[in-house]
Structures are given as structure tokens and as C-alpha cells.
Length: 452
Image 1: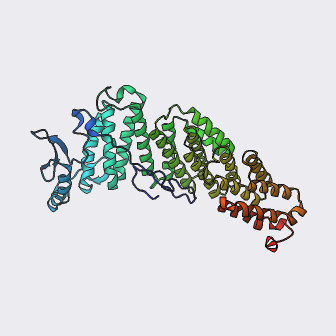
Image 2: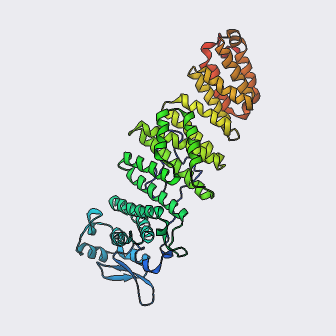
Image 3: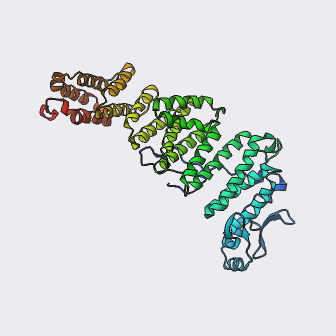
């Protein structure tokens, strides 16, 4: 994984050309903080996890931060942070009495001061969880983002679980989201977005040490966000058929209850599908083959969802990831099927013709003339071009064992087509030429080099 910040999407090394977030086309965006200042005045003491012990107001109404070991107050976080680095504070902190923390086996004196302050605020927020989950969720979510960088995974885990519990309570009961019109109220949209971010952060945290648990958390997070049953992901593993997986993906996408009308919501949904699919594929190499097919199902959903939202570029990337996924798993037969998705939806995309040609060539290399013929028939019905027409004839003559055509006209015809059209897509024509010259040479009565 290239990233260790659990509040930003992880890039998983899957060993394929389809690793998630390649090409820099979509820069990961850190989730927005829930602003403490938007809450009611009665809760502002809780939402500053940088306070060692307490945050209060002085006589002029200016917030102050209190350092318990040094018994000093500070009017800004900048001066407080500078104070934490001073030798005097460090000496006072070492001499201060310590007490055990319920969230961590370490004593408070061994924790970073920011984490110590967070623990104090966390206890207050947890006490509010039942009475006012809206405020508690805001406080805990902000605390989690502030302390995650200090490596106290057990504390971060506890805070995230607490925040998620409050969010789930609000999701189940809209009356708990705060008083309508007040600054601290949670809208249904902000709640759903933040719940996803919280669950993904929890999954990323576990991916460092417990991939099996992380895989479960990733899948739960996505299904909860989209509103689909998690068991539906396992249908792809049962069938092990990409065509059925694509049909299932269409059904699941059409069953999503949320509209996803705003552009940023569509980006969040497709980004989540991309990360979860990549995570499950990476974990499948050591954990379970079931995860591979869950990754297939989710990537197929990403394709169907992007098509529905008219994001054809994102949908095309999903097809490319499917091809890379099948190739990495040694399922070249299935990767060739992806050519049908390209023909149906993506012929306007750069590189689409090369993908179709690659599928035909791979089928030829696997001696699967039937599949090669089916792909070419479908392509030529709508987009017949010289190269595809030639390949269709080559496949047909090979299937018919027409040795006269293979031994006299095949290479000559291809040379004419290649010279006339290769400037359109050099990579594609080189790929086809490789198939004609090297892979199909045993079927010919001569060496193509002899005709030069």
C-alpha cells in the first residue's frame, strides 16, 4: 500500500496493470472534518481533542487550552503545540502522575499529549452517546482524524467504533440527528457520506494486520453505503461466470435506493467501489478465492453504475481493471469476454480497438477459434474495419483448414492492410501481426519472412 493515512484511499498493490487509482486521474481527497464550531455552544468544550485536559473560555470569551502537567493556559493551538516541544513541558510531563487508560494498555504518560487529551474528550463524548449521538458522533469523528497519525491503533479503533455506533443510531432514528435548523444537525446525505468514510477508515486500519477482518469491513462498508445485501456479492463466486456477474451488477445497481444525483456523490461511490474491489483482490492472494470473485462483482458494479451515471471514462477504466484482474488470476478465457463490454459501450474510448484486437489474439493463442470468431462477428456487425475483416477471414480459413489461402494469400493480404492502416493504431497492428506471423505460422506452409 502506497498510503498509510487511514482517512485517505489506500492504493493496493494487486500485481496487475489495473491497480486502483492509476494514472493520477482522480486524486484522493481527504474527508471533510465535521466542524466543531457548527455545534451548539454547550458542546464546544468537547470537540477540541488537542486540549490536554480541558478547553474553557477566559473572562473575555477567548478559548484557552490547559496543560495539566505545567498548570498553564494557552490561547491558541499554535502556542500550545510549541509548548509541547519545550524541555520544561517534557520534564513536567515525565514527573506527572500516570493512570491507566481503558482504551490502551499504555499509561497516559507514555502517550502523545494530543492522544492524552483526546482520551479525556472521548470519555465525555461517550457519556453523551445515548442522550445526544449527533454531538457525540461529531466529537468522536474529529478526534479520530486528529489522533490516527500518532500510531495508537487501539485508541483510534475505539474512537472510530464509538463514532460509527452513534452514526448508526442516527441512521436508524432520524430524530436523533439533531434539532432541525440548528448548526449541529446532521443531514441524511452528510450522515451517509461520513458513515462510509468512518467504515472505510476502520477497514484501512485493520488492513495493516488483519486482512480477513479488513476484507469483511470493506465489503460491509460498501454494501451499507449503497443499500444492497452483502450476500449478493457471493453470487458471482458461486456462478464464476463473467456474463452472469455483469447481469447481476446491472440488477444491483438498479436496486440501489439512493439517487446519487450530485457529481461529488457519484465520485465518492465510484471511488469506494474502486478501492474496495482493489483491496479484496489484493487480499485474495493470501486469504480466500471468494474475495477474488467479490472483487469481480464490485468492479462489474462500478462499470454498470458509471454507465448509468453517464461516466463512460470511469466505466471504461472498470473494464480495463476486469481484464487485468482476470489475467492476473490466470483466467484469460474470461478476460476475452470483456471485449463484448467494450464493443457494446466503449468504442469511442481511446484504446478500445486495441482491447478488442487483444481479446481476439489471446483467443487465437489459446486455440479458441470459436471465441475469436464470436468476438469478430459482433465487432464486424457494427464496426467492420480492414483489420477486423482480415482477422475474421483468417479465423474462418484456419477453422476450415484452407491451406491454399493460408499458404498463398494470408500474409500478403495482411501486409497490404497493415501498410495502409497501421498509422491509425501502431500498437494494435503490431499485436495482430504478432499473431499472424508467430502464433499462426505452424498453420501456414511458408514463413512470412520468405515473402519479403
